Image (cartoon, rainbow, N blue to C red; front, side, top):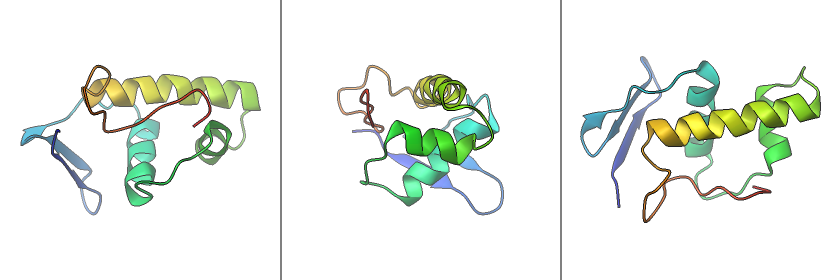
Length: 93
């Protein structure tokens, strides 16, 4: 299993197995990771996360943004094809 080190105070920094992770394309991806880390182990409905990150967007657009952001986040973390993913993603949560 990969070791993930995340620094949220000061500059946002992430390292996976000692190597810096810099592929976060958006602030939303960084915010999503920070939120998930602070609530580790708790499942979240997609609608809840979409509304948290894009409260002024219509639900369908916010859910689309969340889908793209999750994909970018998992790509940055090299988590998409991992045997033991860091982020468990389902259709609902």
